[in-house]
Every structure is written in structure tokens, then in C-alpha cells.
Length: 492
Image 1 (cartoon, rainbow, N blue to C red):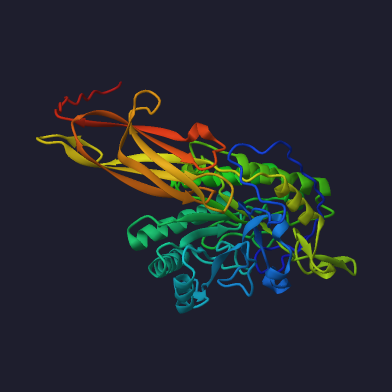
Image 2: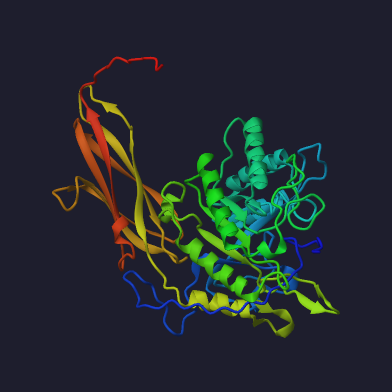
């Protein structure tokens, strides 16, 4: 029987030792950025790490070969920071009284404001496993809606470029989606508008949902006594993991959030022997990386990341190691990449992580995402008018370093007689993983006609996916309008 024990950021004390070797062959493709032999390996913007600060300073652990670009340590400011990694800051929440939406926040609001002003553009997670009772932030839906609203605007006022992450639920089950439905309903009821989201964050653990039992328990505010009645040997089930991603992207689409990134802010395999064999964990780790790097869906995926479902993901943990003593597992958790009791040598799982990223190649994928013309509908009365052509440009590549691009806007297809509009050429730079920017062109003295505008983006040094470098939009600027009758009939 698994016991429920407190954890700084998840829930079960079990271990698996993982050995994995993964090789991807092939030559460097067009648009690849490669570091020289004496440079730090290029970090990948999709890969991250979760670190428990109680196990030591992250800057003292040799994480560079993992090629992760960011880390989370469940606080707003780290004791030390590796030079090659971005710190995702976390605000911790607590609700003292279930009958009130009052809450406490750590660090203080003044500290959050000062940190945001001093660190512009940071990623901020509002709460950790808000749906996890007792051990984590444990917020009733209305309390979280209020806390998110107030902290969102505090951060936005302090730093308009802050990237704010909502949710960070423990797993994507029907009970957890119901919890988030209640959060959205509470937010709209309190503030009269949809919840403003920069990024949605989720954890994708695979845990039992039953009151008083091991696992994830029942979310606060949800009227149920049980949900997923899973067994320990399902903790590395690849199908359940993948379905969580699909289900959450569908939920985002249904609620109007398809144009938001999705971060898996903590995940891994928590349960080890005797329930899960080493090969099962190997298969899970490899399959999860493959799935999140490559799976796309034009209906629910993130358009700015070439319709990928997930923009980045973070493995638990760096070195929160579980050990075996006196016939039982004690302390720490599964998934550790380094072993603190062995001088922070890489574990078999750390070797697996490093081997996987060592054989990935940095890539560039610049693309125009959409064209929007203002005003959207025109009827000329006398003279030609001025239009604003807005184009969203994104980089769906995999590096955190910014890559240069050029955007050109044409009237007609560039390779079939289209004409580059006057001064309609822009340059800029973007990091990967769906980072995007809107560029605006003022199109003056436009006569009434039917136009097909083309936006074409080229990346300096080449592009790994040239097929998505061009999009078009039809614009009708008419000088007449016709009113047609509306015909209503009854179907029997």
C-alpha cells in the first residue's frame, strides 16, 4: 500500500532507476545552428528542469550537458542561477479559510512587484498544484480566481512584458478539468470577463483520485469522492500521459485559449519497483519527449508554434533522490537526474536526458501566423482609404537564442506577378518555441478592389520548414453593396 507523504511539489515517495540510450542520426539540416566544440552546448527552449532547493544549489550541479534552457525551484527568486538557464518564478498561495476568498501569498506583494520590475520578461507561475489539497497550494476555485486576478494585474503593472502562467494542476483528469471550469466560472462572475491568460500550465502525473487514498485526492470545491481509480503500475502509462495533453488542448480550444502556449511545468514517473519495471520507465521518458516535441494538431494546437500541442516541458527532478534504507524507501522522490550522495554525479536518468538532447539539432522555423487588416470591412464612398495590415510572425524552432528574420508583404503571389508593397519590408529577431511578434504596415491610398495579400518570412541562414514561410489573406474593398432578402422556412 502506498502511503501519502508530504512533498514540496508532488505526492508519493517511490523510486525508479532509469537507464536509457537514445540516438538520432543524420546530417545537419538547412537552418541548423551549431555550437563549436569549445562552447557550452546550445540549450533547447523546450526542455526544462524542476529543482528542490533543499537538495542544494542548482548552480553547483553540472546541468549544462542536459541542454535544458529553464528551471523551476518553486520560489520567486533562486539562491543561485546557472548562467545558461532561465528561472521560471513561482508565487505560492495559501487559503486560510474555505468560507472566504482571502488568501496569503509568498513572497509578499511588494517583493513580487520589485522582482518583476528588476527582471522584465520573466515567466511567473501563479500557484503550484492549486487543485492538490493539504500538501500543495490547495485553493478553492473562487479563491484562486481572485488571487490570480490580483496577482496578474500586479505583475502586469510592474512589468508589461511579464509572461504569466495559470493553472499548474497536478494532472489532467475530468475532475481537474471540472475544477478549472469552476475557476473560469468564478472569474467571469466576479470580474465580468473571461480570465486573461498568457500561458496555461499543467502537470501530467498519473495518480489515483479518491478521498483518503494515495495519489492526488479530490480537487477542492469539486463534489466527488473518487475519480481516476488508477493503480501504481499505471504511473508510467504513455497512453494516459498523451491523452492528458490532448484533453487539455481540447479544453483550451473549447474555452477560447487555443492561441495560448501550453507548458508542462512538472512531470515524470513517480512510482518505482516493484510496480514499474525499468524498461517501462525508459519507454515513458523517450515517448514523452518524442510526443511533446513532434505532435501537432491544426484544430487545437498552438498556431505560433506550427500547431504543436506543447511548447515546453520540465522534468522532475534535478537531484531529489529517493534512497532505500532499513528495508524501505525513504526521503526524496523518483526521477532524479543527479545523485547528491555521490557528489551530484549524473544518474542513469540524467545520462538518458543528456543522451537524448545530445542528438537533437538546433533548428529555425520562422513563419507568418496570420494576417489581420483594419478596418476589416470597407465600403468606399469617395476617395481611396488607408488600411493597416497586421502580420503575426513566430519562430517555431527549438532554441532560446534569437534568430533574425525578414518579413515582406506583397499584393499578389510573389512568384506569380505579385508586387512588394512600398516599404513593406521588416526585420526582427525571435527565440523559438512559439515566440511571436505583431508587425504593422500602413497601406495608403488603396482603391476599391479585391486584393490577395501575401506575407512571406525568411530566416537568416535558412529555415528548417520552408513550406510554412508564406500565407495569404483575401481583402475586399468594395464600392457597392447589395442587400439580399433573408429567407426563413420551417423544416418538417
